[in-house]
Image (tube, rainbow, N blue to C red):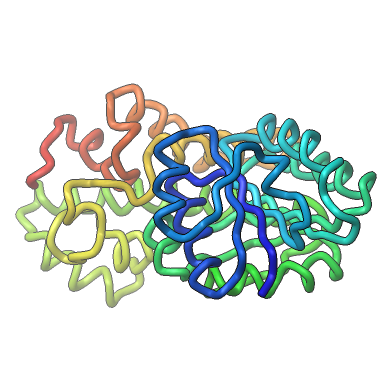
Length: 297
């Protein structure tokens, strides 16, 4: 049994921490939100009054926070309380520069560190099937891997400090652009008289196949477990997709990469969020492309 601290018990962090409890670990948790603390306690976490109290004596510390500024602030506060040789894992999705700064803070305090953002959404967090994209040295990856395997199905060491965040923004830039193209095709199919099922049956087994079609089809019906078949309840909210696309564009600018499709995807999701669907699943971008809010079609 490993002693694990988990800071950030929201929609993703809560079920991730619950899976660590199910695996037999002692998990101390903290979150600023009362509702998150209550839900986590019901999952078997020991809830403490402060983040610093959570990390006292912990072998592994996991953070799941909104943005880079939060990660740096929390790590700065926590590290004086972290024992030597413990491993710090940040599973937030943040900018690469902030991730590298967090690694630097950990090194100053004698802690191992890993940036390990995830793919798989709330469903993957609950089922324990997340993909972890990890950045850090070999020792940190080896120390973190047993805990990560209790929360995910695929654990990938992408390289040194910040490499996990780099992989995450590249992956989600592909996902955002692919979902838009998939939704466009289904809207075009509707106008051409194709049923959703007919187009799905073709695309899901042909050269246009993608995860956006086969696992996350943006129209109700063909994939019963997809958010589209469940009122576009996220899943992965459109606001979070926009956040990740903006991070991808920031990264592209910083290294001089040309990403016109990624830039266009960011603009489209900005419109989708401004249109009022930021809290809905990102596959709901199909409503913007239709030009109306019709959750039944």
